[in-house]
Amino acid sequence: MKESSKHVKEVYQALSDKKAEDIKIIHIGDISVIADYFVIAHGNNAPHVEALVDSVKEQLGRKGIEPARIEGIRSSGWILMDYGDFVVHVFSSEDRLFYDLERIWKDGKTVDVNTL
Image (cartoon, rainbow, N blue to C red; front, side, top):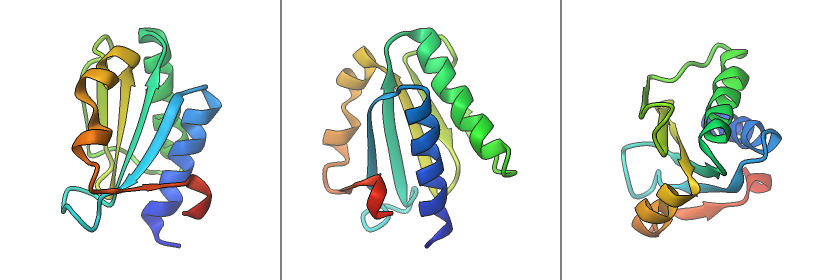
């Protein structure tokens, strides 16, 4: 198993543990040099979004994996966590609908977490 796939599964679990909504994994490695995967999810309100981000940081941080950068502020509706081979996007439900990354990256392959 490729290392990024393993970490994406851990991200999925961290988001799921905190009840993230509609978690999607998109493999973009064949169509972009940005990353291998995008993980996209949303929370129901600002504290929920913050809890999702904290859960991912904590889960990966325990393994010594830190994001290269985090974009967006806690009170914003979109926080991007760049881990190099994969990028985690945590949205408010409204901002997720507005930015619609799934449509923008429709050429990527949606992946089931169980097939990673």
